[in-house]
Length: 391
Image 1 (cartoon, rainbow, N blue to C red):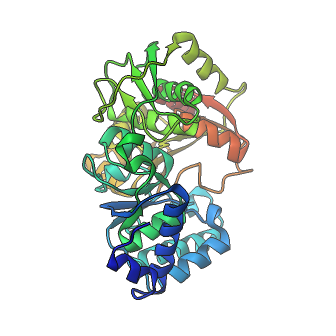
Image 2 (cartoon, rainbow, N blue to C red):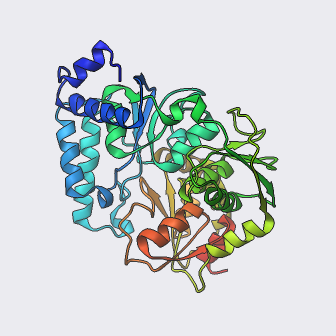
C-alpha cells in the first residue's frame, strides 16, 4: 500500500504514540482488504462507546489513546450505556455510571464531540453527497451510504478512532464506486406506509440480500423516519450497509438482472415473526434515536395521559433541547414517560431488569431478543403509546 510522506511519518511515530498506533491499524486493515492507498475523510462517527460493551480493557485502550491523541476531523460519538445526566432516574448502577463517565472523558480529551447518538446526521454531522467518511454504528453507516450518498465502510471502534486521530481511512469496500452497484432487484408488492413497516421491509430484504446490495423498487414515497428505520433493519437482518431505492435515494446504479418479489405475505410474516405472545412491561421508542418530528407526534399522543408501563424515548440531547423549546418535552414528561438521552436499550445494561419489550424498531426487536432475552412486541409508534397508557 502506498503511503504519502505524512502518512509514513505518522506510522513511524513522529506525530505521537496514538497516531502511530492509529496508522498501524489503518495500514493493517488496508493490507487485509487490498487497499492501494489511504484517503482523507471529512468526518468520523465512533462506535463502541457503552461501558457495557467496552469493559475495563476498552477503557484502558481509550485512556492510552487519549494521552497524546487529538482528532483531526469532525468526530461524533455513538450512544453510551446510560443517559449521561439522568442516569439515576433510569435505574443505572452507580459503579457502571462512574466507568461510563470515564469512557466519555477519554473521548472528550481526544477532542471528540460527546454527542452519544446513533443519528449524528440530525445534529450537525451530516456529510455531503460523495464525501468519504469513516463511520461506525450500522444504522448510521447505512443511512449515510444510502440516503445521504456519502461513502463509508462499517467501521469498528478501533478503526473509527484511528481515522479520527489521523484523518484517513483505507480505500476499499464501499469507498470504491464499483463496489456500490446494486446486485439484485427487490420489487415490493406490498403496502409499506410507516416506519414500522419499513423496518419489516428491511427484515425481509436483508435476509434475501445475504450481504448483497439491493435495488428496491415499488416504493413511491418515504419519509426521513421511514428511511431511518429501513437503514437500521436492512443491515441488522443481513444486508450490506447500502441500499438503493428507485426514485428516492440519490445514488445511481445499473439495474441487475436478478429480481425477487417482496409480497404482502412476506411483510406480514416478518411482522408476525417479530411478535411474541403475552404482555409487555417495557416500551422503547427511538431506535435509532427519534427525530424532532417523531417527538412532536409522541407528545400529541401522550397529551393529557399517564403511562402505566415503563416508557423510554431514545433521543440525541440536542434534539431533546429543541423539544424542550417547543414544549414537547413537558407534555411527554408529564405523562410519566422518560427520556433516555445519550443511550438506547441496545447498549444500556438492561438484562434482567425487564423481560419483555414493545417497540416500533425491527432492529430493536433483533437486539432485544439477542442481547437481553426480551420477549418482543413489534407495533407502530401509535400502538406502542397505546400499550404504554393502557388503552
